[in-house]
Every structure is written in C-alpha cells, then in structure tokens.
Image (cartoon, rainbow, N blue to C red; front, side, top):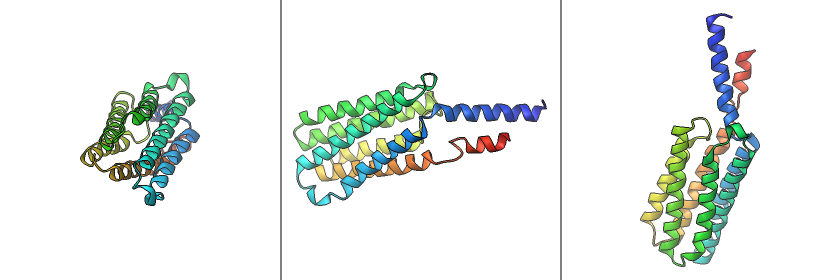
Length: 196
C-alpha cells in the first residue's frame, strides 16, 4: 500500500469515526423538528402571550420536549460512542421544567430559563472541546444558549420577551441542527465516495 493510500485510509477511518460518534440521523432530525416546532408554537401564539400562565406553560412544555429529545439521543447512541453530555443536557432541561412551577413570578421564571440556557450552552462547549465529533454544531448551539441566557436576564421583568427569546433560540437551534443532520460531509456520503 502506498503512502498516499495509507494516508487516505487513515483520513477515511477518522472521518468514519466522527460520523459514528454522532447520534443516528433520525434522532438528530427529530431533535431539530422538536426545537423548530417549539419555536413555531411561540411564534404563532402571540395573541396569548399577555397571560403569564400561557407563557409559563409553553416554556415548560418546550423544555420538557427538549429534555426528552436529549435523553432519546443519549439512549440511541451505541455504547462505545455514548457521551454523557446528552444525558446531562436532558436532565438539565427536565430539572428546569420541574423547577419552573416553583417560581411563581416573572423574575423567577426568567432566572430558571437563563440558568438552563447557560448550563446547556456551557455543556455544548465542553463537549466540543473534550469530545469532538459527538455533537452537531456545538459552537453555534453553545453560543446561542449563552446569548439566550444574557438576553433573558436583561429582560427578566418581561415574560413576553423571555418567551420570545426562548422561541428565537429554539428556531435558530432547530434550523442549524436540521441543516447539520442533512450535511453530506458529516454523514459519511463523501467518505464512501472518496474510498471507491
């Protein structure tokens, strides 16, 4: 085997390794759909945003759906590619969902959403650095989470703004994750073409 063939085999093997560390494509698409759907609910229910209970319920439902999808992602991974990050992301979202009813006021609601966004954003960055190739677009999703935390804390007295920022985050994350799920370079189709 020539040196160039060996280097191509090594490069092909490392690309396949990165692909195999991602969650299955169906799970990644489902996660993107859930995020996008939560954002659409926020967007198309604008006439009901004056009621704090409605804002609270939409956020709690969105966080619960996000948490469940992270847990589905964690369970769907193969044992050798299983990362603890989706589990932690799922638990953070579900804990935030459980803490939301205890807040009772707009400021508490905003703080819970901000803390969840901060934890999620930081976990995405941690995964990007410590386990490269296990998360889709961790820099974008992590930065969006940190930006959400900052914006929510700045608008902590306005429940409509908090819900609006949450909805914008879910749409942005859903679109980026949807695009990444169909990216042929990250899904291995270029790898198989090069190896032929």
